Length: 475
Image (cartoon, rainbow, N blue to C red; front, side, top):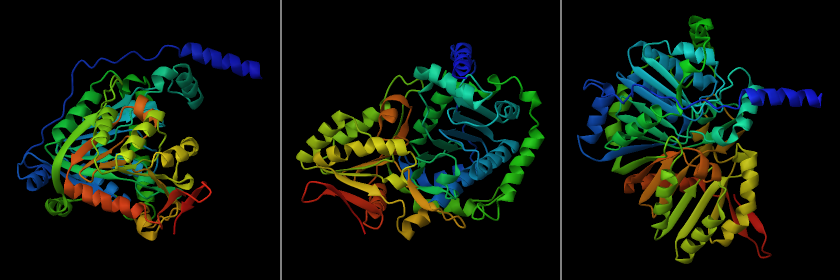
């Protein structure tokens, strides 16, 4: 039996040895400029007053994270550009996709760029959807084997050096004037809808000057040699029944509208009142949007973040769901604390980490982190009700809360909000992105949020006891 299995694996490996050739996009597709009567353009102008700064709104609550995405989709008249690492096949994934299709139906140009590593959607179905005149779907660094999970796994392992580079970016742009960036993918855990666990996460809604860079980075990925049109990955598009697919999508949303989706509108809605409030809610500052090269030829995000951390004079705060530092990191952090810089690190506890393996690697470094003079906190998987209310969305009550938030603060003057985790995969392999923001108002709000998260009722603080053993102190 083992011999037969070995032969099968070998045949599959031989069949899949060659990776897909780099795709050449004969016509470069660029971001569109929305008309002046776009509700989003009007809202942006109300906020910016045609100034040259950027404007921000932190999105902490899960329900607000999904509502803002629905608001951007429903309000767009010109374009939607969505880039994500994960688009889960679940209730929220269906709701967002249904609304995106409605936007395409009313004439909005939609570009969806999704990393292929966990994509479970039928290739023929994705290819068939591209027949829509206003919808284009591209997959980043796709697996050549599309038919079955076993074959995909073998192909991934055989071509590991190429396939292991993934697109971890998360960008949600509407009409070129508003974007959402941060830690959230598209899936129930991010929007308070999972009955297993929901995430404490963070996004930022942005408009103003920095959108030029956000649009540029999306275009750079969309037109890169690693972004494959879905139509090129299947020759069976005609076999997919689009009408049946639409019907299933509609049923899934409506079937859950009184349960998981009770707090969200099932159909396209008017969000004008929400948009009008932005001029009072958004805060002002300067920002730079940095993205890694689509082909992995630079580490722009890490380089910029390293430079920002080195400039700290008083305080560094790091929040990361996966924290596996390199040995050089301890030397740098230790040097900072010796200079009098306070370093606080917040990571998930074992129960709040959705990747047990990542936690098992992190736990080896607890002693080194404390010895470097850092303050170390682990987020409780059963935090206070105040924190749970940011993660669960009625009527869903998950048995525990995970932490997926990614943020860095320097001297309470600068902050980074983006897709980057503090682990070797993010630092060396994946493409990442994020906003480097200088805004006293925004950093003050972010500091308040993190301060709540590290309170004893929400996190354990790790310290040495009198015997030199690590103890966890909480409420």
